[in-house]
Amino acid sequence: MRVCSFFAGIGGFDLGFERAGMKVVFQCEIDSFCQQILKRHWPDIPLHDDITTLLPATIPPAELWCAGWPCQDLSTANTNRRGLAGDRSGLFFTFMDLVREVHPAWLVMENVPGVLSAEEGTALETVIDTLEKNGYLGGWVSCNAIHAGLPHNRDRVFFIASFRSESAYHFFTDGGELFRDTASRESSQTKARSNLRQVALGDNPLVVQRRGGFGYTMAKSICPTLRAQAGGHQGGHSDRPILCGEKLDVDRVGEADGVSPRMDSRRGRLLGNAVVPAISEWIGKRILEIETINSFSH
Image (cartoon, rainbow, N blue to C red):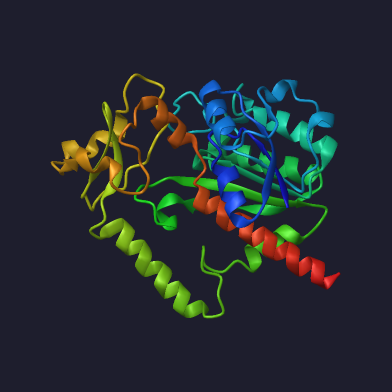
């Protein structure tokens, strides 16, 4: 299955879908530093910069389009959030204008949980209504990085929809436990719950942000979120481990989970915005399973 990636960032969606067995054929990303990363890892893939200047005819054929559209106007961290009326989060409509011209078979979109409450809940209704008006059926699911075994809390909302087809419904009705869709449902549920407790409350260190960089904490009462801060430091609520008297082990930052010891505010911003590849891999595998079943039934 071919994938076109919009608001690609550093390629979280792209990497996960490729791990699932898909092929990325197009990317769109305006951030110059993100573009460098995308070109390094996908040097032969067409890369367009500004979605507002993108013409539908220039987009290669693909069965799946993914989009982690900007969250700034939807995030609860923004006290003046304008929802989908904002210039940045409103690019959802620009993306859907392209969808309306091409109608890919699948859409997978991602945003922050603030999309559920923005505009007194009407932002979510607008997203769903817009999808339905353009022929897409499906739903949304909340997935957290910690459920994928990563030592930090990053909850995100994913919309999965299929064009004039009930295929996406099977994603939700037949999915089972996250990452654990097996015949032994009861056993897998027990295993999933125990793994979650180990990650959240066990001895594994959690990645945290703090002023000047990143580190690990053994705190068991918190699960900090990696955030894309706009300021000159990485402060905010992520300093709580220090205020609570918990030990923050900065030296461990390069020892686990692929977090670079060169982590700085720029890289932190990109990581805070990125889709977790393990989650997109799970989504991609589920979609491919559904497509395989559909092909046999026809």
